[in-house]
Figure 1 (cartoon, one colour):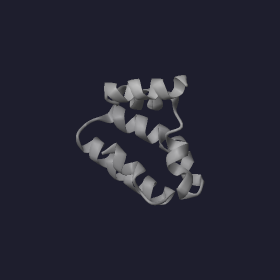
Figure 2 (cartoon, helix red, strand yellow; figure 1 turned 120 degrees about the vertical axis):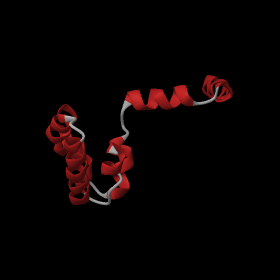
Figure 3 (tube, helix red, strand yellow; figure 1 turned 30 degrees about the vertical axis):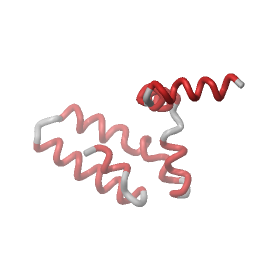
Figure 4 (cartoon, helix red, strand yellow; figure 1 turned 180 degrees about the vertical axis):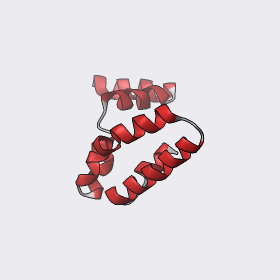
Length: 87
């Protein structure tokens, strides 16, 4: 549901989708989630001020996300990447 907010084409569409998600969360009585969403959505969507071809790089430029991707890789790829970087 939250991923749908970030899958929109532009900032206005993202904000509209965020409002839809907030309304859904209100109906399901998740007030804390609504408060968090409404307080942080503008800051979270700051990357949409840049050209869309840059969005993925800006949005995922997070060290923790990179580490999580590394952890999810199969063990054989770990060994291959260590060998390649050791040379």
